Image (cartoon, rainbow, N blue to C red; front, side, top):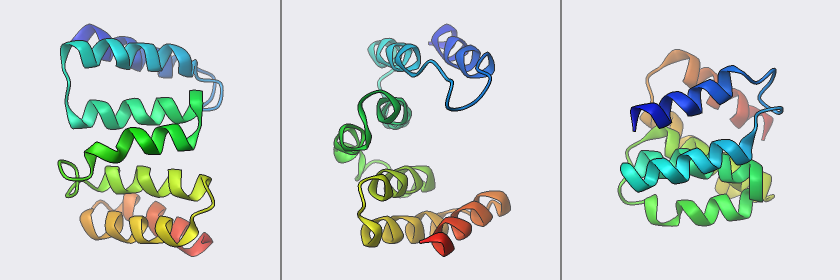
Length: 120
């Protein structure tokens, strides 16, 4: 699993920008990682890659079974908020952002979530 995690990191590090990331490769690496180390956090990260390959709707579907195990994890709610916003579901996105904000004390993360709340 550590080699797969390192490969995922290498793809990100070798990309000139977030948008230029080889998302199909990242998704394939997460698929392989799930075969070795299936966990809610790996599934969450895979859903982020899936968003960039197959769209927000597919990624949101991948999050459905993660609500219970990741309810106390701010990044689950922040990810869900971004997907909901992509799908035009502003009210639900706002609720998810508020939950993410409630769950984190990190000043940088709070500032980003607060900015996204203010943007609508």
